[in-house]
Image 1 (tube, rainbow, N blue to C red):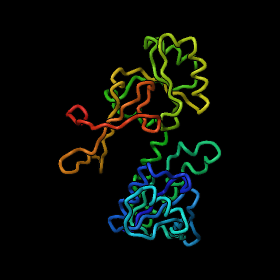
Image 2: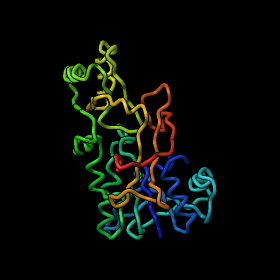
Image 3: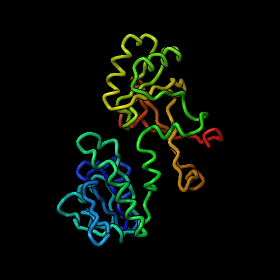
Image 4: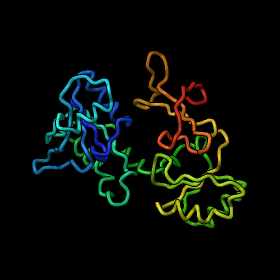
Length: 269
C-alpha cells in the first residue's frame, strides 16, 4: 500500500512523534510511506490533488531517528506525487501548532483531504469530523457525565464568578491549543492573581475555565479507538495512563508527564 501522512512541516517533525512511528512501521511491513507538509499540497487544473512529498529508499529501519534523518536527507526520495493515487491519506497535522503566522495551514489537511476523498482515497480521520474538533469546544457536546463543569468565555468577571462558585479551585486553559500549553491551576489563595492568569490565557483567544477534578492527580487514560470501538491486540486494550510529574499539574508527555500501564475497567469502557 501507498500511505501518505500530512504533517505541519516535514522539517519540524521529530523522531518521538507518533507519525514517525506509524510511517516507519508501515515501511518495515513492506508499504510505502510519504510525508507531506501542510504547505506542500496542490490542487491542479486537471482536478487531481498532488503534493511535494518525501519518502525513504530502504526497506527496513530499527531507529526512528535514522528513519527520519534519511527521509529528510539526501538519501531520501523527493517527488511530486499524485495524492489521489495513494491508498490511505492520514491527516496528522496539528492545527493548533499553526496559529499565528501559519494560520493558512490550519485547514490545509482538511480541505485537501476532502478533495482526495472525492477521488476514492481513504482519508483518516474523516475531514468533516476533524473540522468539528478544531478546538476543545467539541468536548462540550459529550454527555455531562464524562466532562467537568465548564464555562468558555473571554469575560474576566464571569470567570471570577465561576471560580468562586467552585470554591476558588479551577483550571484555566485556552480554547485553542494542545500539549498542555497555557494551562493554569487556580487555588483559593490565587484569586488575587486570577485576572492576570485570565489575561495570559486570553492572549490565545477564548478561555476555558473548568472545575478541578481531584482524580486528575492520578493521571488520565488514553484509550485508542478504531471505527468507534476500543482497539485490542492479543486480548489487551491499546491504552496507557499519562502521569504528571510531581511539580506540574499537566500530564502531557510533552510537558514532562510519564507513561504507565493502564488497567481498563468497565468504568472506562
